[in-house]
Length: 399
Image (cartoon, rainbow, N blue to C red; front, side, top):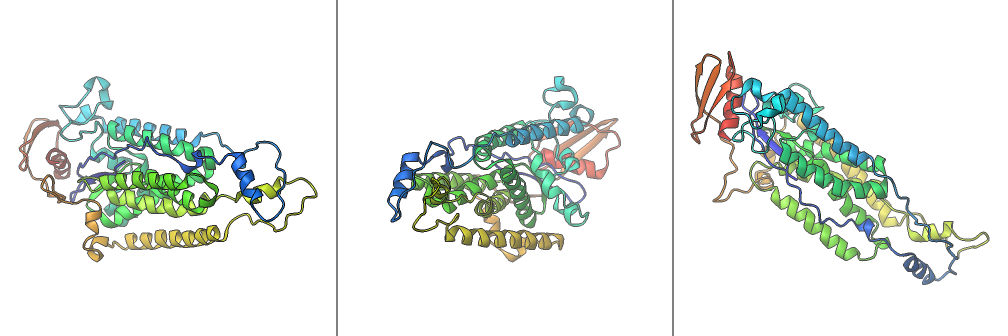
């Protein structure tokens, strides 16, 4: 699950298509490791008070029918189709991929290897562009960018991951909590990305997906006492999260969106996914006339403390982040090493975003561009091309 990251030239957006990887098929959510009824009875029996007789095998937590996550998947697919319709590759390009699809055909592979639209179309549809957020007051881009994707491969990876992670969470906690988790985590990921990566546009749902992963971890921590095999579940989750975050240090991947989404979801998990204790359920199901030696509270003290601390940190973090962003603050100026969290340069790749330069010739309605850095050339059908349009095309050609 990687955040799509696209560079933006001074006068027009530039194409920077990156894959946001999936790979969460092995996720084990701790709620799947249900505590059997006989284990609950043993736990109650070991207390100092007489044990109430709990009749039946009723499950203490309600199971929800998952419909919101599939609806989110459909919404993302619909948005991708609309974006491809707006893109209309054959109108502006000669060498479109799958031209039999008509206006839904894909950009040339050398411009967008993920089989998708141009960065110009993504910007029209609401991609995260910091300049437009700050100068144009288009704050809504912090939300809309989470519903756009850079290509078919990008969309498939994210939607498969969303189905694997999201459906289990919605079954256990319901559509309201999971829906808020998804949207707020996506917003938090976009916010951190906008503070650190201000020369590129960004699209993709991975900030929200990492938020769901973070909430799974905090849910396990806050409900630690009610789960069996919790150490194994904890280790599994930590390894999965660490691997996915480590993939974010590759070039052209917006790992700040991953980190921001994860932190937002992690804090939200303590707020939304808190579970009552089994002792409290046992008292509620006790026969009439049963008087326990001590009344069990619904939540443990540490759960309430985590709830309060997480809510304060979340509100403070999002508020401060928005204030800094709208003031045009570049967080890299205050943290000289933070850029390594999103890309670590090696002998195999560079993390620098170099300006693109192209040699252009216009013959009738055909525009011929040749990138000076990699030698790639392409022909576009673009009568009366402006300098900003040429710069945008050049960026895609030179990526």
